[in-house]
Length: 112
Image (cartoon, rainbow, N blue to C red; front, side, top):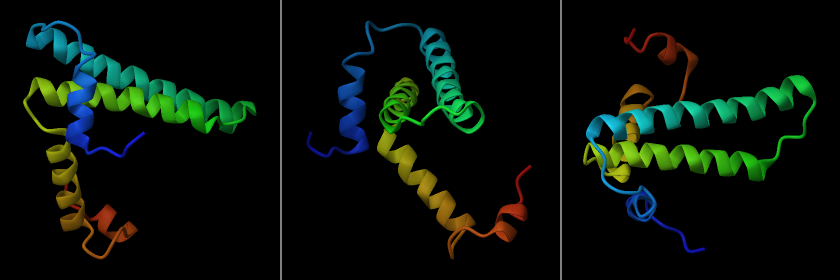
């Protein structure tokens, strides 16, 4: 598999998004999908840490990919590029942690 940009991923992922729906349907599908896939990731970690299961990196990668699909779908609904969202996040983090992460800056970052 060739490396791809976030925007290439978003284009490819949207091939499987199905027919156009109302914005409300896309928002609910995406938000619930993000929550559901996040829950599946948490469940893998819970079972590993508390139930003695072996953590499958392949299963974790699969669930992270499913989560990314729903994030890309929500980005598409708002005409955001996934790459732009990722870049904005890095800019925010660079402003918040110009020297890299520190607990002190995390505690005193100023948001509620």
